[in-house]
Amino acid sequence: MKLALKEYWENLKVEYEATYNASIFSDYDVLKQYAERFRMYLITLMCEYSNDVDVACTLATVEQVLRDEKNSIELLEGFLEAYTNELSDTDKARIYTNLAFYYNDEGSIKEYDYLSAAVKLDSPYIETYRGLALYHFTSYAEKGSVEELERSLLTYEKGRSISDNYEMNFGYAVCLFELKEYEKAKTIFVQLLE
Image 1 (cartoon, rainbow, N blue to C red):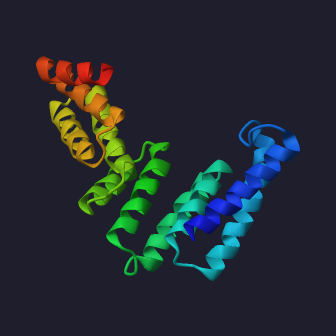
Image 2: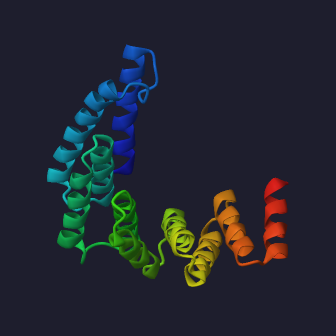
Image 3: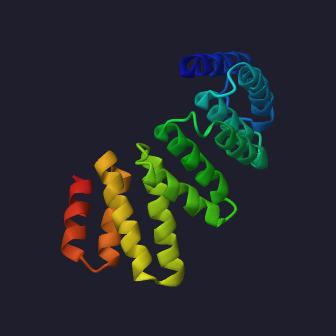
């Protein structure tokens, strides 16, 4: 299904770019028309494949593009409720991670709850660990809680085991620096500059 969704979106992009001779993301008002078409296609697929995670997550993302954040949240929470017994832990972690980012804009504790639930399922998604590490780091920055900083460090560490990328290493090094472990932080910062 993932390939069919990608192909449909790619066709919309090609049509847009041929018509307007610009990137599909260059004008929101026109993009909105194409996103609505994609949304209708996805709603049709949801009727046919109601338990397909790719369709549900893609539709939720399109709802975000259309600035219908509430629909995104309701869609994924309803999907979880309806199919939780059929979903793999990886699929649940994906949905929890998406929901956490949708709640992020509201400053809700649900962001933390969903990211924590995804971590408990051993989420394979780097976004889960980045989101939770940033949540803890922000809490540290706002409250000065060393405990939150240590949680951020541990979450970055777990994320680094999934993807040893620049962003995870940088966040990890910043946490070390804030914990006054300057030499360890310096080593990582220098490696990042090489």
